[in-house]
Image 1 (cartoon, one colour):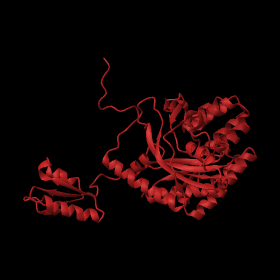
Image 2 (image 1 turned 120 degrees about the vertical axis):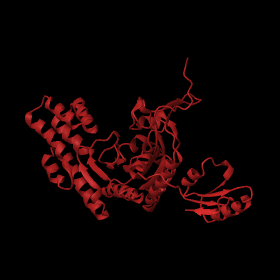
Image 3 (image 1 turned 180 degrees about the vertical axis):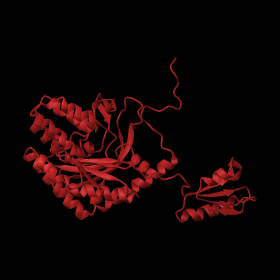
Image 4 (image 1 turned 45 degrees about the vertical axis):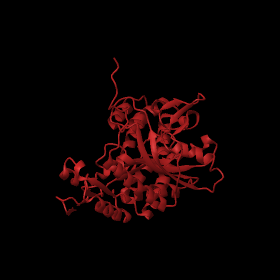
Length: 394
């Protein structure tokens, strides 16, 4: 007999209870205010997209896509990220707009989970896309805006790790030639940050001792601006040198934004988003075991929608941001007006007065409160008009 599902939720789906919901709303608004202050315009796209368009160009693995059929037999997907849908809009409805475009978004994305490993199948992203600016100034603006957005929420203990996918790929290609399987094998270790596994894999390669040493030296390219010199020394070709020059230029611009204290460089950085082509970055907070935010330059995504334009952007994982803020649950700002039969009218007038001042006020008859002390503890302030009350608690 099939077990009846009553309280269970689909794999990876979560409920959002009032306190966490309110914290998300607050953080979302703070992020949005910072983004708006940089001149970005918010937009939205449908939750469902065609698999043939957004589904296939998304960097999300096919097995992580939620798929369904519409009445006409087309395969649809729940959007797995916001970047691909916005690229679709930019290449169609906004193709004649004045570039660069500064677009922003907030909304849920969906990625199917195969096992119950704690990862959500639905989560909310707040982010930006700067479309049509292929310069280091654009990269710097996006990273500086990310830093400012996080600071606006009250978060100050975080690091933005910056890398360059062009450096790593050019470095591997120079050492390993067209051995794409081996390159992908090593990139996967770097993506998972399994540096022990990477070292073991390099030792097993059928290449010269010098090449093995160079591959291992790559792991040391982490830190502040001091890594630029060692990165240049290890560079094997012009593409690597170009990547280092772009990182140096980016750092100079970030210094002018006065956000350099949040920046850490890592030339081993690899993203699961395979459409990144240059500068890429990830954000971490010390009390999180997962990414807080990520982003980078993607110059090949828009051409797949027949728009010749480069772009860069970032996405903040809103639920993880709230976890990083780690605010303790307390009174939620609501005022409670407690009444009985005789004081009901007086309570209504008092509640109305507070609401007109912009306060959130609940009016509750005392007979329907099982535990008066517990009820009051949930509120920031209570006004008790009952015969046994007659008091105001703050």
